[in-house]
Image (tube, rainbow, N blue to C red):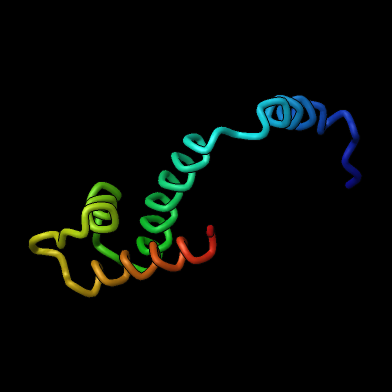
Length: 90
């Protein structure tokens, strides 16, 4: 089934809006990286059976605290994933 060019009209409008905001302020880029660092770490690990909630994942990777009652393996998975994200995003 062929896709009509008109079906991408909204995408073009949104892409133009984003392009008009560039270059993004450094604070905005940091905020986006931090947001996705937690979100991607949580979702990726959750798919693999990690028991940490998104809030717990945030505490582990941003504050360096272990969560009582949670397997240490889950904490190490979260910190390892966050380190990999940092490596790829810098």
